[in-house]
Image (cartoon, rainbow, N blue to C red; front, side, top):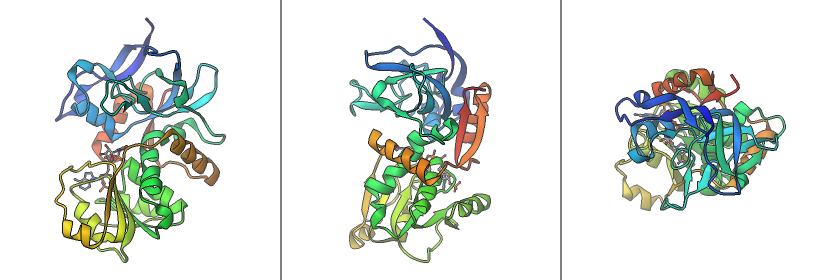
Length: 320
Ligand SMILES: NC(=O)c1ccc[n+]([C@@H]2O[C@H](COP(=O)([O-])OP(=O)(O)OC[C@H]3O[C@@H](n4cnc5c(N)ncnc54)[C@H](OP(=O)(O)O)[C@@H]3O)[C@@H](O)[C@H]2O)c1
């Protein structure tokens, strides 16, 4: 059995997820089927999902140790540079699928195993460290705006919690698509930065100059009422996360009177990731990168995400 370096959950700690993180040696992932291959990871990025895993959300104790990480760019066995689509078939999950690090070892390691069909070519001109931001947070934002939010029918978009990975992606993509974009943040410095991406930045709960057709919700309880109040008749409120609580009070009168659609979504399809990669490569859109941390300091990358201070994606460079 070959050994590799990896960042993994060795236990759960709901109060202090960083204490549950171990950086050390793990066996290389096995290949469950003939059509699976091993990719040498060159770059990965962190998601809030990794902190949830360390807290024990979505994992069972018997699955430990679990290598973390959903996102990767790397090199396939034939030497091609690839982006890894992170949703893998999982017969023993009720959904029939799972995201890397939920059942199968994740990307925060020297190598990751996935079905060959999960590998997409790295587009020319896109750095591996940028591509590694796209398969989870950016793919989620892409689907929230396109298939779910029907942004092509929209004039204005509201993005709640402007500093997060999904939120910065949604702002950058919606601006590139030519929409008027409003973004909320509790933090003045983040509001300045999101304005730099082309959004009108406002404080959480602030009245907008117009009602919007699409709301991008990843914050949850803290912002949901504002999302409802800011929605134009027939608007789509698309939810892919609930960082600040998943049981908001919902004014149903507003939902039916304004004929709002509240839509849940998770990740996206390989075809949507292909579209997103092409959109970024062709339109010059690049992910907002908070920081690039060498794998040798991966624990610092987790601490940075946990601090809540991030703006954009925390990337891990596996070549350093
Ligand atoms: N379903 C999927 O496929 C999918 C994919 C990726 C992520 N997600 C989920 O989406 C959520 C966002 O993840 P992320 O990694 O993009 O970002 P994140 O690190 O969870 O942060 C999102 C934003 O939430 C805001 N926030 C946090 N606590 C808050 C509070 N108490 N009150 C108001 N705002 C608060 C912050 O905004 P400000 O500091 O700017 O105010 C922060 O920038 C997570 O829950 C994640 O699990 C889901």
